[in-house]
Image (cartoon, rainbow over all chains, first blue to last red):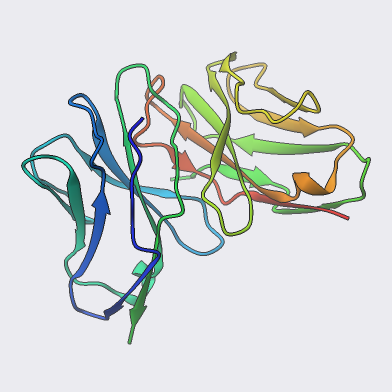
Amino acid sequence: DAKTTQPTSMDCAEGRAANLPCNHSTISGNEYVYWYRQIHSQGPQYIIHGLKNNETNEMASLIITEDRKSSTLILPHATLRDTAVYYCIVGTVAGNYKLTFGKGTLLTVNP
Amino acid sequence: GAGVSQSPRYKVAKRGQDVALRCDPISGHVSLFWYQQALGQGPEFLTYFQNEAQLDKSGLPSDRFFAERPEGSVSTLKIQRTQQEDSAVYLCASSYLAGSVYEQYFGPGTRLTVT
């Protein structure tokens, strides 16, 4: 599976958009980008995934560059409860079930 | 609705003791996963069940680790003769999909401390 690079930490003001970047320059054509987050003392929580088109759900938006070498997770109106470690994961869908977490980005939303 | 539950939430074991960690997945979920998370690290895959069949145990760190899911629902992760390096949070996840990296629903984890 392709590796990902994320900043170690980021800060965001409450109510503002949080934009979390992820580099995955070695991504293969059949590999998706997945995002999970882990709030302190909880298990990880699935957020969103995409292949090459931008995706949006009730939690976030995922923007994938045209060359698919990087992506950005956007939380449009960050709240204090969005403070968590955010993991960007790359992998295939078919026959793949192992989530390979890196160290992720610690997003701190400040009041 | 009820999510994935794990028990106990915290476990302290003396080195050499055996421990058993329980996972109750979401009802009807086909897939069940165990992950180990060391302090400050992301979770690492241990093993995968599809119904009662253990299809992948490649992540189990040693033969002291054993997992089962006899009726395709509740699962138990057993660690024999615990060692200090086994101290970690053990996470269980389930999915209604048969083997997928997305839509895995995680429990809160069991924090194991070996003294």
